[in-house]
Amino acid sequence: MFKKIAADALGLSDIGKIIDPVDYDKTDADDYVFTEDDEKIYFLIKTKADEYCFTNLALIHVDGKSATSSKRTLKRYLYSENKIEDVELETAGKIDLDIEIKFRLGNEHYSIDVQKDQIEKLKDLYKALLRISEDMRENRILVELADQSLEKAVTILQNTRPIDTNLEKQYNELTNFGYTWLTSVRQQYRVKDFGKVFEKYINN
Image (cartoon, rainbow, N blue to C red; front, side, top):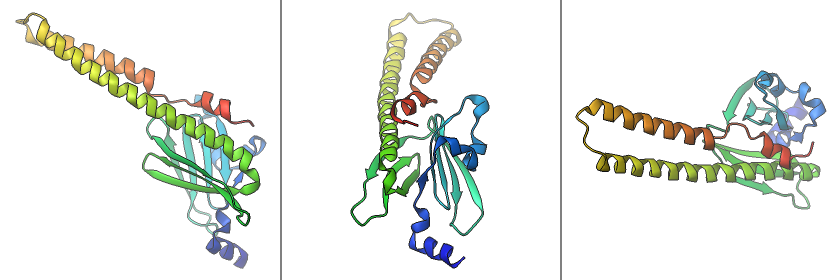
């Protein structure tokens, strides 16, 4: 017990290990993956207190308050609802015991320490998260451009088409046009599944 408390106090308990796919079923996070909806684990880091499970759809964080407590809180962050930003990889110095990957997911800031001998595997996660972050940023730009195009199109339609005595009909036509446009843009640029990105960069 004393060793566990000491390790927790020194921060050594927070150094994670990258779990091999054959051992995913031995983790808590595996129980919360929606395999029924084609969700798949691509990367999993386990510390004594936490698990960080990266699937094609979300980050599943099994949050433990400390290494000495058995309590866990399940947190699930969909990529489609949370931006990935500020992805960084911190390599180890000569005396360091760990390497570190940092990123922001929505409003949450993550800094995950991993055993330094697993640097090559962590590089794969870094590249995958960085690519997803770049894709998300590009898609946000395209959505903003689409919104601007819609506003211009509606303005032109309002100013150039003959005045219709049936204002309700005219309003409905413009509303349906805007709805159809926004729906198509959302379907095209709001990506839910990043499985292809993980498959490209992560070698399991």
